[in-house]
Length: 428
Image (cartoon, helix red, strand yellow):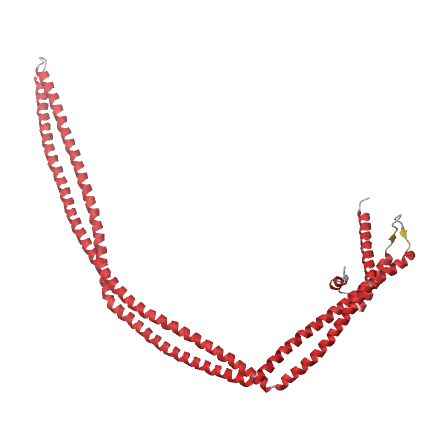
């Protein structure tokens, strides 16, 4: 390891900065070293402390050397940091002085230039404010025009809107009436079908009654003929059978008459249902025409209103666009006014600074004196830093062997202690 590396990376903690701390550390380390037994490298036996006095003196000398080098390095580092801080403050003072001297030399020029800037900026502010006032007046006029336009448009299109709404109401009523008529037609059509079905059922029942009467009549006639051909038939039996025959013929005639009556009656019901259906269909056609007419009228009124409404909205949007342009111009002029105000503010700040510097030459003189004193102090500090650096290098070179010996012995002692602790920590 080189001396430069030893200087940048000290081996002892920075707590050994003061002589009192160094002395305390030396005493503690020496006591610890004296308390350690020495193990012989040949047979592992412990060597008496009185035989190790020379070794302990060497260790103590090494510890003193490490502490001394560390203290010298810290003293050198502190002095270098102080010199660096002093140089930083001196450079800042030089910049301030250079600025004050430059301002004082160009005082008249600065005032002339910045006052011209202020005058120009104030003129720009005045122009911007005048433009803003004019634009705000124009905006107020446009706002009033827009409000009046909205009122006029509302008055103009209100009758058309009311007419549109009324025709739409009539169209909706006609559509509902049409829906009701369609349901009525559907119901009437179903009634025709049901009536026709019932007619067929009743006529079929009447025909079955005729067939049944004919069957009974044929049976009675057959029985009567059989009875007439029998020699044992009594007159009373023949009389009863003939009465039965007359009754069955009467039943057959009644059944045949019922067929005609039922047919005529059911046909009348079917005709009535068909007439009702026809009437409903006629009403449906009328309702469809009325609904179509109402819808066409409502659509026409809606288109008429929408045309007028869109035209009115177009005029309003045109005015709103003009208002938006004026507002944009107002924002631009306000930005311009703010920029000019900032220019005036910055120029006035430069004027105030120039007045302050020009009126306080004693501050400049004091700063010059302080810089001169600071230069002397910095040179003194730099010499101290150089001396401390040389002292540190010389101390490192002269104590290199002692410090390396101390570090080596300390490392060996630590290894021995670890081995002893590990030995006693093992289970026996």
